[in-house]
Length: 344
Image 1 (cartoon, rainbow, N blue to C red):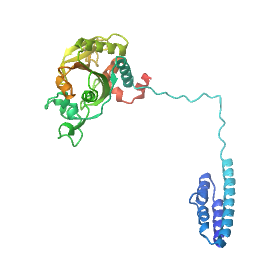
Image 2: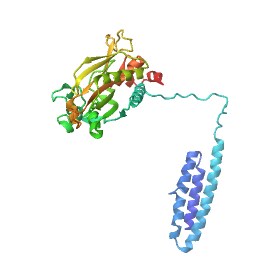
Image 3: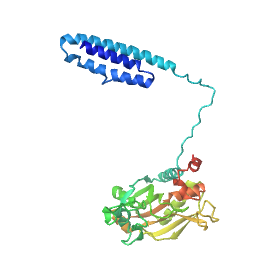
Image 4: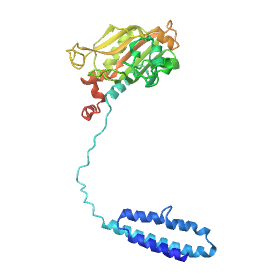
C-alpha cells in the first residue's frame, strides 16, 4: 500500500509539472480531485481497508491532496498573472446603441380592432388553425361540389384527402367555421370577434398571399337590423383610420350568409384615383358580409326562426395596406427589416 501511495504521489507530481495553461490545469484538477478523480476514489475506498491500512492510506492520501491543492492554486495564480493585460476601459466613451423591437403592422391593426370591438361589447375568440371539412364547409352550407373544397383552394393534410367530414383535415381556409363552435359553446345572444391566420392554395400577387390574416365579427340576436350592421362597419373603419371612410355594399353570394354582400372601401393608397392595389378602380374589397344563413344557425344548434344577426369577415392585411399606403401584401411576410422598422 505504501508503494501504491508513492506511485500516486509521483504521478500527481508529473501531472502538475505538465500544466502550461488554464485548460490543462482544470483537466489535472478534475482528474485528481473531481467527483470521480483518482484521489477521490482512493479516499472513498478507505473504509473498506483493514484497520492497519486505514491510518497509513488516510494519512498518505491527505498529504497528496494537500500538495495538489496547494500546487494547483499556486500554478493557477501564476497563469492568471501571466495573461496579457486587458486594454484600459475609457469610461467617457458613449454606450453601444441598440435597436428596440416593435409590433408588426398586422399585429398593431389586430390590437386596434380588438380594442374597437371590445368597446362595443364584443368578446375576443380564437379558433384552431387545423380544421376539418365538417367545420370549414359542411357546417357553413357549402355544397358538396363547391370548388373551394378542392386542392386548388384548400390545403388538405396528406392521407385525409379521400376522407369526408370530420376525418378530412385541412389548414383552415377561412375563420368562419369557428362561429359554429362558439355558438355551440356559448349559445345566443352573442357578440364576438375572432382574428387569425388562414391558408389558401393560390398564386401570390401584390394583393394576395397564400397565408394571410382575417378578422371576423358576428352578432347573433333576435332583433338586429341590417342597417345596424352597416353602421357597425362604418364605425369600426372610422375608429381604425381616425376619419370617416367611404364604403359601398354590393350584392354577393357566400354560402354562409343570406342575403350576402361584398363590402368595399375607398382605396386609401391612391385616394380613389386608381392604383395597382385597387386594380385602377379606386375601390378595394375588404370584407364579405351579410345575415347568417339559416343552415349555419341550425348547425350551431339555434332556431333560425328566432335568431338572426350580422356577419363580416375583414381582410386584415388589406386593411393594413390601406392604413399605411402599402402597395404589396407580400412585404408583410418578407422579414425585411427595412420594411418592418418603419412601424415601431
